[in-house]
Length: 165
Image: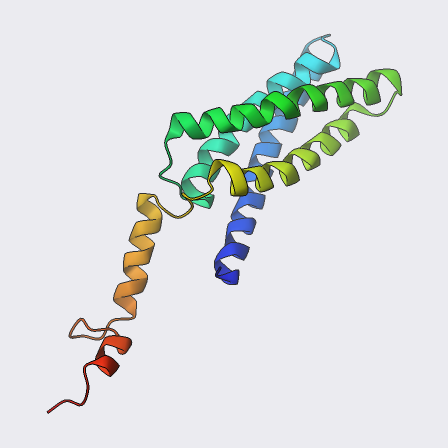
């Protein structure tokens, strides 16, 4: 595992998740200010919008997966089939029963989502298909070409070729 590559993957996931977080909090805020709905539908709508955004960007640019899109979406849906009811219940309990600030509760849920989804995406959704899409393949080709000499042979190939005559 290339530590630099994996660090860059984490940074991209953080940045795309932050953009999804902006979508979620703006959606939640608009629904809070414009409706009289209880916490759960406002949170649920905001969560779905951010998930769609986050999945699309992370699949393409962070995990660079050529994995079957319907299968990957199904796996993400399974994650959210567990995460969504639990986080919706937690959010409702904390905000409506205990009286916690709804924005704080939403931030807690977003943080839980961020950490658990990165792990789930890495080890379940995109396992075996990380760095397989066209972007990853182009970068790999570029790296191969950068390591090649003008005659097309890499440094290792030149060493194996023996002395030149």
